[in-house]
Image 1 (cartoon, rainbow over the protein chains, first blue to last red):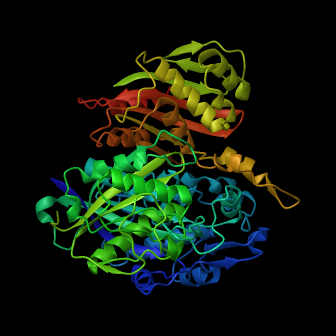
Image 2: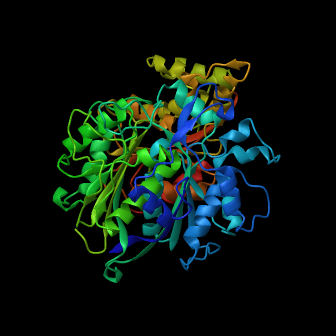
Image 3: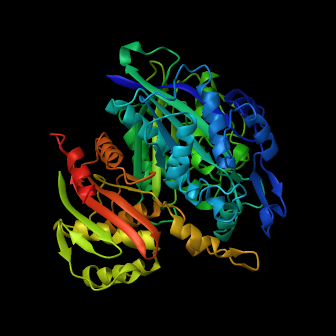
Length: 384
Length: 198
């Protein structure tokens, strides 16, 4: 039996440019979400978690940048470079595959192209090629564009490609860079909260958006070679609600099925927590509570991390997986920032304070536009 | 094993190798395919061009299957690829953001994700299985075939509506879509590459 395990990771966000800085910020309850007025010529103010562009450029100063890169590309180059440090992985090997998770990539090139980049740079596949070229990787990169669940789907794609035997390493990198296009789009859907988002709370009013890039490098080995501290991606599932293109299912159909599929014959008592999507929109959080209840997980601790970073779209599945791994490493369940009073039909085990756990496995759950849902069960070493 | 396949471009439609006779081109061709082969799904007219293209491709290969439709099932996945992402929808939404004419349209914004087409096909057919969308630098049949074959690692997935669905704009598009089944003899990879080269 082969197992898929994590080699290295990184998070680039407004809360820091390393995984350690980000985990420490979240442990101390910091949020990068703040109010912006007159930003990007958007008439209405909005709340978001944005990376300071100058700080990003300064941090990228350590990279050998031979040409102009967009903000989106710099976030990925920085995150992948930092994940590769001390990993022993040679990105120029033909045994390494890049999988990029993003929803809007370089979409801001539609209206702002300061450095006269080639017009096809707006296409995510072309952007991914530029990223591979930077690392001299010869293989055709894959971009997962599955709305908000992309970050979990990209990890499932990594598992499949590693099990397939063609590659020894897969570099999964998820990123989205906020812009006028994205913010006005979510404003038009009336999905944005005027305040800090409040996942699962009775007073939740919508989501906040955020910039981030996050990277996990996965590899494959025989089960008997597994070390006690290895993080293993056990099983993943992607399912559709077959209900509505922009609203979640009332029965939580797709999320429920992904949970059942990844749990398989695992006892819910062995799960430390389910790290949910928890966007803090009325419908998403309600749907997730129904799905968790139907899957028999109502007693398992649940947490959501959007109160620290906002919804980071293509990065969300990767960043939230990394922070959940750090949490289990430190025997904690991270706090759901912004949550106070239960506001969903099926009460869940939520807390706005850090809780203790001795368990060594968790589920990452996401759902998104197009009616898609995805989950992965992770375990540490020989747990379960 | 590939059960049926279709190629739709802005100039012609080919189902299982047989050219279908439509006098129109471009966007009008899509409407004509709908009126002649689908008829009963008015939501079609709300879709953007990428979704219309993928929806019609799926209809033609599924109709050809000749089994009970619209029964909820989890064993069928929808796994599609393209180069242009949702570019056409992105341009249309961006046009509503002009500083002197600022009316962001939510109806256009929802189509600025290419995976919406996988959701449209799932809704139409009550498919509760996997839906995935991948963007590639080019129509790379090796990558498409290997990702679809790999998707059968999901033990529940028995068949896939898969292929290429690319829409540059309302009058420049190409889809090569097929219905394929899990193949124990592992011939599927070559079959998919062969269909994509047609």
